[in-house]
Length: 385
Image 1 (cartoon, rainbow, N blue to C red):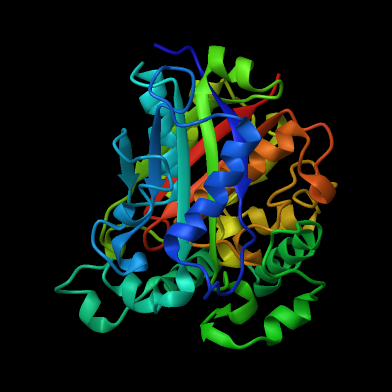
Image 2 (cartoon, rainbow, N blue to C red):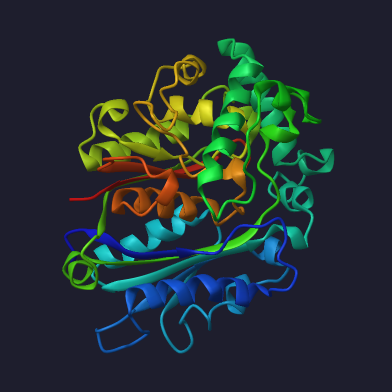
């Protein structure tokens, strides 16, 4: 059994609004080829290369059943061990880590891909709700998020301007990330003046439609040290699902995230996350979620995230930079989102984040989420030596 798991190599495509000239398998192949080239590893069964693959995709988004089948060859799964995770990419990395810790494999490749542009997201999201009571209402993740935003903002007196600050910060950060999709200098006034999608969520409060892929290679400690001189260690993990029915939970809280974070912190020995974590990459599909998720992660008390942001604590030069990469608001595909958060956090620790590098970061948090209003949360704590 492995003592700990290290991230050996990271690669991803540029994220774009649409990639019409690229098939799904070609999209995944672009990231896989880059990560294999970076690591110098090959798909081998003799213990000297990549032992297995984990792909992350969803049938509805890919428009076919057994969606992993279309990318299994390019992910090295032909006549070899391969598994598919049909959820957020953070869970795919979590699963690969468990395969290694179990002693089953030493080196596992993980790849997530999605082309949101090829379908209608709201129809896909509608399928995720109860087929008898909720789906006939036409509800999707956006309208559900609007209910959550209203509940959260009303209960804790969160101001629209505080949410808008998240959109301004993240798209400004994205200017320094060449793989981001949307970047630029916005004002709070610009966000508040943008089109209302589902009140109080406006166009600039929401993640844009995006196409792209992300891949990474995980390995046992012994092999990780052999393959790279800059391994990033997975120090703690935690995941948790909340109830399926929105009416069965208080949408102003995120209990499943709190539990997932507590498990990850306990495993990593983190006592004060705001002080001990140097950089955080959070999956914020909507601007208000970055505030709510920060509270669930224990960076501040309930209802206090707005003031934390106003004080500049989550800026690039703040005490805990959040989404230095630009986050999801800058454009990252669903399913790929959580794996990309891990990739960005790892790049920070390796000192390879380029113009959006946070100086001196030694411990990073990566977060993935899935389902309506954050039904699922997965938290990983990463560190470098």
